[in-house]
Image 1 (cartoon, rainbow, N blue to C red):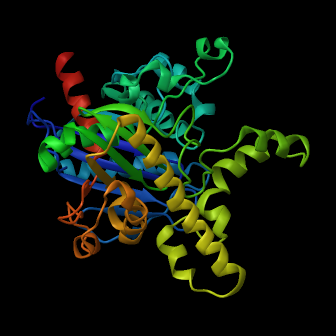
Image 2 (image 1 turned 90 degrees about the vertical axis):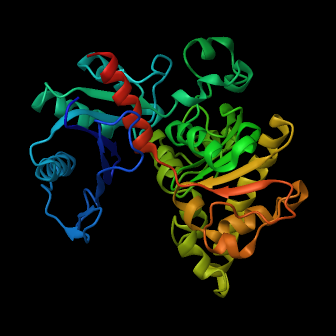
Length: 400
């Protein structure tokens, strides 16, 4: 791949992140040549952010904003390449279903099969498929690769994948898949470099962003995770409910007469931190209202209390599965940047011997546990784009 780059795309409903990596070096450098994001897609004020430059407002076709955003990224990338070629484009795909675990070259057949998994991840699945289809149509000569967030959890035992449902449900693919796999896979590379032998022991990684999950790892492999069949399961999230008694859904539909679409909208978009607080899906915003008087303050306190409690309960459950805990790591937007969330979680894990260094935690240091802590606690930035681009480099190299 002489003088070429790999373009990594992470397409969502309202934003498209991209990163450009130098494909001439093997292994791929973890730091991209440059990266950026088109945000606010579909909204009144979309913006383009690029590393090394100030954010700028952009105009996107109101009828086809995602297509326009992809075209904008392509134009900016080609301007920066200055004659260099694109060796390939790699997409993060949330759900690979029963059939896709390893990275795969994108074809129309692959796109068609991945569309069948849209009901399993309606907030995420449609958008990389749209990007794949557009690129396949407009630039069929550019190789594309799909990488799957479910793939890393393929190592979990059947007992961790199975639901207590009639056996035909398992045979039809109703099982616990797990998500955020590219993030956890990156941790399997980064954590041994930072924490040595502790990373190969009993480790729990907390991927806390707008979506959130935990992964219990042993010898750098997934043992179990909190998300299951869909990206609704497990922890309380920004707008998603997390674990929920299925009887509540039956009640909402039978007694409250909510339609299937109403329930889906509630669970994916109107629940979580936003639903409980009525303020925001962001912990950093809600915490500013904890001292408010009246219902607003009470709901803010309840939202943050429930958010932390769910994390603590799941860490306790995963620790039981692992038989103990050697390393606890926080990553993703909330995990990397919210010291107060980390402090509250670790405070409630004192029974495990977790003790923070307050100054290190406030500084978002790589290691935030104190000298007396029986569990090593870290903060590690994730790098899903590099993980996907590395897979693409190896797949494209093998096919040449």
